Structure formats: structure tokens, C-alpha cells
Amino acid sequence: MKPDSTADDAAASFAELRTRWLEWFVIAALVSGLLFLGAARLPQQMKIPFVVTTGLAAGVGFAMGRLAHHWKIGSARLVRAGLAALVAGGVTLGAWDTHRRLAEFTRLEPIPQIADVGAIDDGIEAMLKQGDVPEGATNVNAAEFRAAQEKRREIQSGRVREREFRQTFVGYLVFRVPRQWGRWSQPAAIAFWLAEVVVAAGLAGKLAGREVYPSSTNPI
Image (cartoon, rainbow, N blue to C red; front, side, top):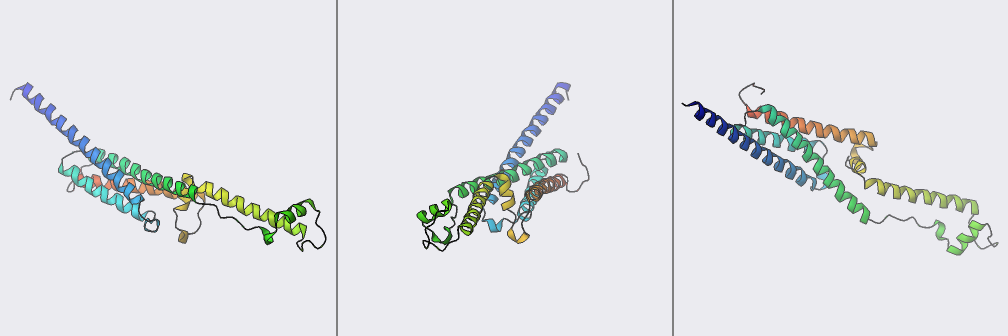
């Protein structure tokens, strides 16, 4: 065989491998994105944190690893790294989509109002605030009324702050933790989600890399 023919064959093989790798990457990106985005649209009670995410990641890792093996991609290391990054992106995309929809729903939801203390009319309330209440006009003690009104304002302000917090991404991360698991702090909810992303990405990458060479220990 002539040297120039060998070089042409090598160049053609490299171009074919590069094309297969690009096609595999595009398919993996679409599968990861669409799968986790679709999972984000499931009812909230079905989206058990960690369980659903890692289960989907394992399925993606196995399927894309088999495809890489069938297409003879040849590099388990690249498959692992590429799929891990794509799955991490898919999980993040799904979380952001859920956060966006929850924030929109929260903005449209009216804030529950607390009824006025003792159904006091505006005139009596004004007189109580001024300390000028005609004798017998009401049996409401001015000091008690002011304390009750202050408590009412605090509760209402708390509801407003909670509504605003739930519209943030961090608020969504806290909200997504099932109430049966207790009330988690913001740092704990953030750390839990980040751990979920890392575990899902690592699991997908590991399974995919193993399927590239299912009967070999070659790590390359």
C-alpha cells in the first residue's frame, strides 16, 4: 500500500470517528436535557429528591454507554466526562424550569389576608390610635388593640417575605424537600441539591464508561 493511501485512510477514519463522537454528544445532550426537563413536569409528589434524579441518570448512563460501544467511540474517559457534564446540566435545567414555574404560580397566588382584630371599624380604630375613645364606644382596650395590630402586621409581613423567598431559586430548593423530611435550612437544602447533581453526574458517567468496554478494564 502506498504511503499517501495509508495517510488518506487514517484521515478518513479520524474524520469518521470525529463525526460519530459529535453525533453521540448531540444525542446525549438531547436525551439528558429532554429527559430531566420532562421529569421536572411530573407532579410534585412524584418527584422524590435523589431517587428520581439518580434513577434517570443511571438509565441515561447505561443507554449512552451502550451507544458509544456500538458506535466504537473508543474513549471511555471522554464518554464519562462528556456524559457527566451533560447530566449535570440536565439536572440543573430541570430544577431551573421547576423554579421558574413555581415562581410564576407564586406571583399569581394572592397573599392570604388576616382579618381585622375584633372586626373594629375604621372610625373606632382611628380613635384608638389617637387615644381618644368616647366612654362606652368600645370595650376594646387600646393597649391590647395596638399589640394585636402589631402582631397582625408582623404575620402579614412574614407572609409577604415568604412569598418573595419562594420566588427565588434558593427558595425552590428549600421547598422541594418533602415536608415529611422536616424543615431544612437554606444551606442544608443547597448542599443536598448540589450533592444530588454530583452523584447523578458521577453515576451516569461511571455507567457509561463501563459500557464502552463492557468486557475490558481498559480505562482509556
